Amino acid sequence: MLNPPKQVPEQVTEALRQAESVVIVSHVFPDADAIGSQLALGNILESQGKRVFYYCQEFALSLHEFIPGSKQLSNKLPDISQFDVGIAVDCGDRYRLGEQMDTLLQIHPFIVIDHHAGHKEFGDIRWVEAGRSSSAEMIFDLAQALDAEISYRAAFCLYTAIVSDTGSFKYESTTAYTLQVAGHLLKLGIKPSEVAGKLFDNYTVNRLRLLEKVLGSLKLYFEDQIAVIKATNEMFEATGALREDTEEFINLPRALRSVKVAAFLKETLEGYIKVSLRAKGECDVSLVAMQFGGGGHRNAAGFRIKDKTLGEVSEDLLQEIKRRL
Ligand SMILES: [Mn+2]
Image 1 (cartoon, rainbow, N blue to C red):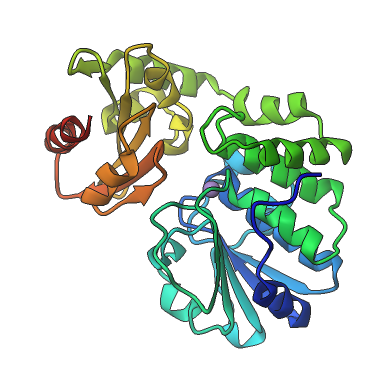
Image 2 (image 1 turned 180 degrees about the vertical axis):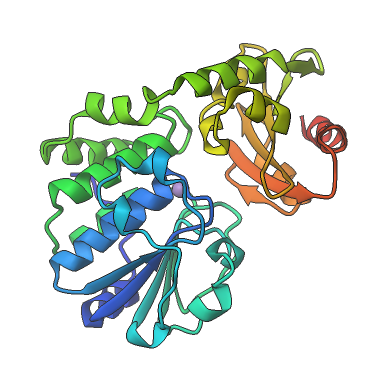
């Protein structure tokens, strides 16, 4: 095995060794890395005799329900006095904790494990490595540091998270170490085809009908270097698809040969315009997202906005992307 890029900070392992009851939080509207990391870490800590509560304000169970343990996720935070450690995984800033942020941050020590570039510090004990492929890769290291066995279930969570956050090992963040961790997880019995099937080959008919409409909205700008697709309320109504069904759609315009930045604008049930950005090459879309109060990674970022129309957001966004191409 290669050595991990960095050792797990002693403070993290110390605090977890002493803990008896912990709450693990992932970010609002979690992706597979957030949920996979959360559930894997919980499974690892439970195997060491600790009580674990899994909190997440908003999660899409139907999309992630194949991730083992996802039924344990709760959006109701109990009395925090029972927890002696709080842990946030995959949260680039405190607001990603959701509405219970203030309450959660009253738990001390509060440990933060994250890999987002542009991470805004919060919590008491921070382990942040922007170069990592995924939070799950860090949770793997943490298991080693705690001398914890990784169960098949935890391995399944970690592998799913890594595949998802690296775009199936395609993104720049994929390192030799990432592949070693993945290889180790295969040795624990994980079947890549099974995970890929559950992560990607999971469309409903409604979802495919929605995709047809969303792709129909494709517009190209700036010598086809910028691609924009949209999902409107009307499209969701016409197809009966769910808001979460748009997962992965952004990768299709991104796959265009000429495209350097792809944007996906979606109307949410709460009246927001939710924007996902993907880049190949020179444009750092996390900087674009930050201009609109969001964040993310160099090649994958996002934000949401209220009180503006799809057309207005699209206009402002195009200006900002052009400026950075
Ligand atoms: Mn992540």
